[in-house]
Amino acid sequence: VFALYSLAQQQLSQQSHYDFGLRGIVTLIRYAGEKKRQYAHLLDDE
Image (tube, rainbow, N blue to C red):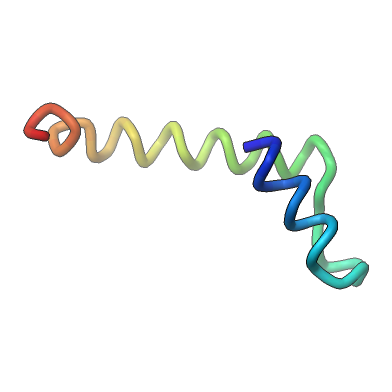
């Protein structure tokens, strides 16, 4: 996650609609956790 955010922050323009702060990282991690729980059955089958 850190590498993704660091690369995006370097490569994307510095416009204000990009949020690379802690709030954005927490939102991303929560979303990833929700999706992991939602699709947990798919991970077991692999």
